[in-house]
Amino acid sequence: MSLKLAVIGCGYLGATHAACMSSLGFEVIGVDTDPVKIAMLSKGELPFYEPGLDTLLSSEIKTGRLTFTTDFSAVADADIHFICVGTPQSKDGLAADLTYVKAAVAAIAPHLKSGSLVVGKSTVPVGTAQSLRDQLAKSAPESDLAWNPEFLREGFAVEDTLTPNRLVVGVANDRAEELLKEVYKPIIDLGTPWIRADLPTSELVKV
Image 1: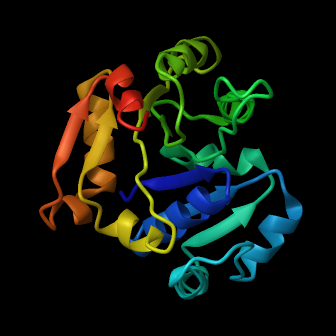
Image 2: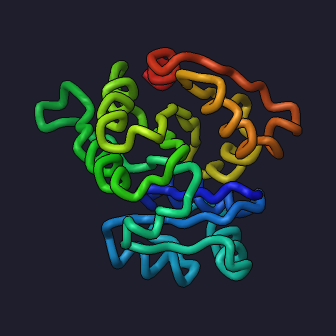
């Protein structure tokens, strides 16, 4: 049975990840609180410019594998949930604002099915992933959390997603790693280095 994926946050990172994962053959649902953004993406239109992504987005929507919504309950069937929301600097400029990341995890928690995996892709301070994993253990105890930092360059986002120079995953157990290996198998098969780390190390990669 093919895995179903959800992408939470459909800005630059999320829209790119959703379209690219769909192109690997997965059924993907993208969720965002912004109805204007969702309306555009649903029509195959990007709210920003990224070479090649508009064509990929449009073609994947036509396949029926890729859909977008503002309804968080739509993630209930997903096996893996990628958190792609922004982490802007806090008002004092000294730290990352984790409001959106925490809100995204809280929003999907009531809808997570047993055995599902939440995967953070946002850039966060060390300790965030473990804190979110602890939060999830209380609100959705039969799910788990991992971290999978992105390394996207503007203008090369599709290329960097589908043919990255490495894949880094921060996991707390073998099952989480195996699920992510299943998602990324087509990319791993290209010879892409696979790096397993613990949660704090995977967060440090982007600092």
